[in-house]
Amino acid sequence: MAGPDFSIGELARRTGVKVPTIRYYEQIGLIPEPPRTEGNQRRYDRKALDRLGFIAHARSMGFPMPSVKSMLDLSSHPEAPCEDIDALVSGRLAEIDERLARLQRLRAELAAMLKSHHHGTVSECRILEVMHDHDHCATEH
Image (cartoon, rainbow, N blue to C red; front, side, top):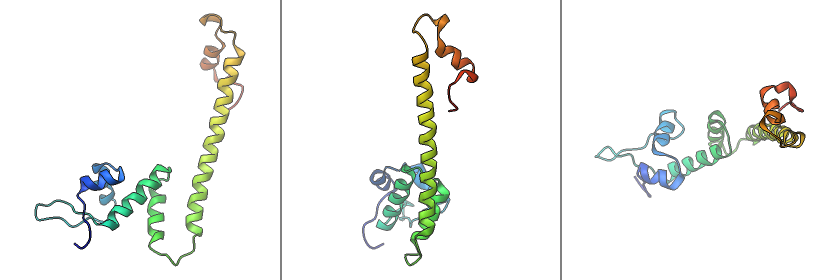
């Protein structure tokens, strides 16, 4: 093998991806199975390191595995238009926007719970009342 080669442990250290996850990615075809030494040790090249780094970055941004696979497939066609990748990113952005909206509603509900009770005794606690019955919530969260 020409160029640098890495053991699976070195690949894991360089990318922050755990060894079992690297093996899993091989099993599902996200990274090609590498050649092995006479001692049956996997040896990865720079291309595998870069591909695994791409996967790790995409996963850290919350892209689901099918989207990661699609982006990897698309990246092997540099002449293709970007519209499919744009659609994947737009979809992820819409998911994030929806989650932010849900979190804002949840934040408003928690703030309202704190504001609406008088910090008396547990028996008078408005927060517990609301937690026991969702119909007492001010917003849908």
